Length: 154
Ligand SMILES: [Cu+2]
Image 1 (cartoon, rainbow, N blue to C red):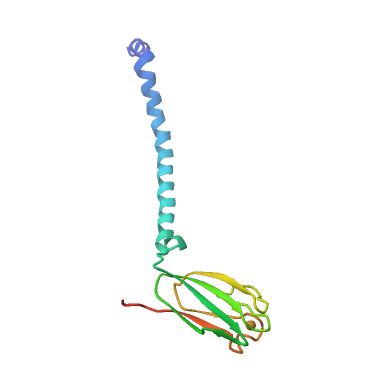
Image 2 (cartoon, rainbow, N blue to C red):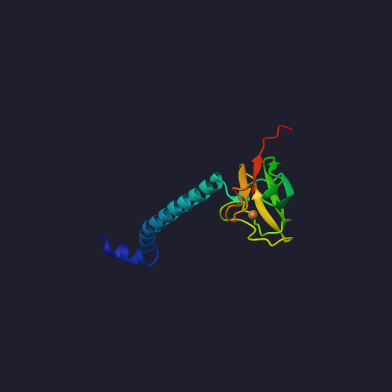
């Protein structure tokens, strides 16, 4: 009873309907997987932004601070900066011996000969920290200074 109409209809409605019916189930799975992937990756990206990256930090002020490396002294020994300040050090070795300036265990000027100077970008100050000369014994003898993050109410 169904064979004749089916053959007649097969040319147009039946075959397309079947292929469409089979198609969506596969595409639905793929679309679902894709959607899940987008949600997961998107979530990770949003989480990354929430935790804060350098590009997301707001800069309200830029300061260049001249640092003098002296005979077991760093001048000034206290650098106060307000929030969202991008800091650049102009480091000069005014002593007769070699010195350097470290702003973290990984970042520093490298050794500076007497009279030599170097510009060191410290980025945006997010917390207080020490800066120092990393040559053995020099920090202990006084070659240490501090960058102090201060809150400004003005
Ligand atoms: Cu030194």
